[in-house]
Image (cartoon, rainbow, N blue to C red):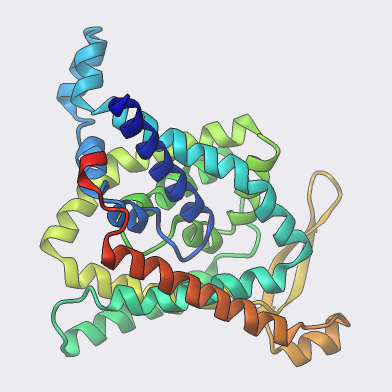
Length: 316
């Protein structure tokens, strides 16, 4: 009975991670840290090594499963997948019908997340400011280079998965935020909503590749170059914020396979110019309220993490 309770708690923690992974600004890695499973997650992922491969080739499935902490990983990833499938329909609806409110909500979450990540930097000096500025330049250039709509071929979907999954093992930056930058956020939300197995399988392969490769690199960098990595991430996120600005004007469209117009090039604008050109209510008051909602929701999550309400070590 007690063992079943432990399994259910792990599944719930995976679900919370999955919810976080849908929202740009909240990192699945941060939730893993809050719920006291971050170290186990990193160690389990890093267990995918040559020794585990030899066990698998030799057919020693039980030893392989124990070596990679398979039961733990299965429950966590099953919880994540459950949330992704469940909440993708809600997110898809909001993107289509209430985009200004949704992006304002996400904007508030990301702003408070930036302040929290900033606290992780240990040394307060000029070098830190320089690294943040470098990250800002990189983030801004990346956003300017990458179009609103990107390729939907196998390689780019695979690449998107391998990069976005780094958020699961990197507290701070969100995988959804990375998908936004790559122009694949709405695309993947719709793939989850419609259960497009080819796209999900391709993306999943990319995630698996990213977990195995990047987990070791990120673990090393966070251990040896923590201030550098965190500073660059902060700057990168600041430079990328224009990606989720609520009011945009589409300059260039293209027709997809279904004959629906999709934006290729968009330009941020003020809510007043948005109203003048698009002829729609910019919902300024609502956007401010949703920004505040996202801002304070993130504050509540962070306070929970500091009080360690979810950090019951006997259940992990």
